Length: 395
View 1 (cartoon, rainbow, N blue to C red):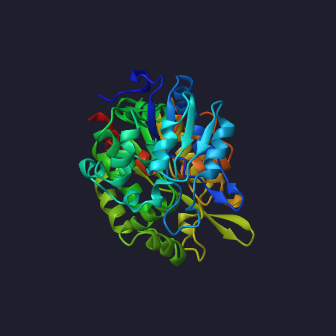
View 2: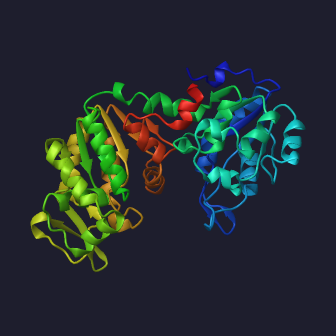
View 3: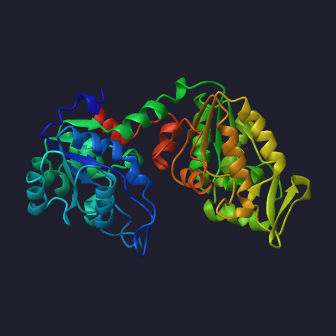
């Protein structure tokens, strides 16, 4: 059984708390603090209860433009929290362990980017993860471990699966909420309608197959590049430009979508029209008007109306991925209208990643029952699978 914060005696304890504050960066530092705000509840509660909190987190990928230290994150958390938050430019050195020992009860420190160490960018079984430098050297300075980084818990990184091998371990409030909703998707109101869009074609097709085979989905509505892949698999001639976009994302997408249509065509819904560029304007085309020299950038009004009718009758609406290129105002309509329709279901769940970004851009954060902090992690749980980071806590 997974232990929650209510089970933790936090007073005076040195806690290693894994959070996911990996954020967009610009020349001036943080460009968006949404992921930091998500963890305020957990960190504030632990500090209020007298814990000495050492925050573990990553930022960016090695070699990437956003691969940087966590000083700006620490400064922003210090502003967001009532408790004092410091910064340490190392993660498991003698200095880092000393800084943890010197923490006053009710205060926190952000340790350095875990991905500055190559082990954290590798995949380990839990036993091997516990023997990495990061875990082996930092664990003796800690009394317990808290995983609040749901969005990263599908990865076998030492900071996710290693510490539970050596320390009493608990789920933070973010993790608790995510598990409460996504971990019980089979018990959500029926009928369940999955809306799968965006550009992660292979992942979305895998999700569609899993939820259909397991009986978790009554209907799957496709949109975005995912929808285009299903249209191509169904024999619709979208045009070379749209086909090229799909094939750039995945060479197997059309075949895999076709195989899924063979098995579940009566439960998979595809766009009835698409929107393309027409000069500087949005131009909508019925499927009979295709192919087009321009790539499909959004679903059209007929599709929006048909999908809205299905969502209006949904017990649970599960959104993962936008319906089109929502970043361009001309092609935000499909995403905007679908998301509005989803809020009218008895229960509405939003996967993280690009889906949550679209909500923020379209100012649609209100009205949903649950907005996940995770992208890949949410996708995995929405198929009914457990995350390795959660399994580590359950041991």
